[in-house]
Amino acid sequence: YSSHDRVREVFGDRSPTSLDNGLARMADWVRRHGARASQRFEGIEVQKNFPRAWME
Image (cartoon, rainbow, N blue to C red; front, side, top):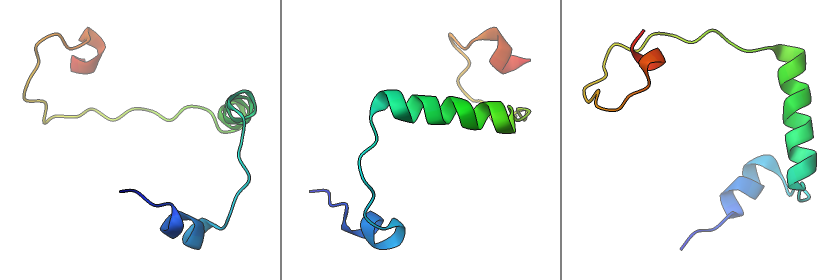
């Protein structure tokens, strides 16, 4: 079974966040911090049906 005891121990007991509020907060964070540049990953073994952008 799964328990959230360790998470609460480390981060404290937080009140629930609604989906709408969580998405709004995340969008605000992205606006303030911007997107990070992606790094090219060289270790792709299975390439079937990959998006073309993943291989560029």
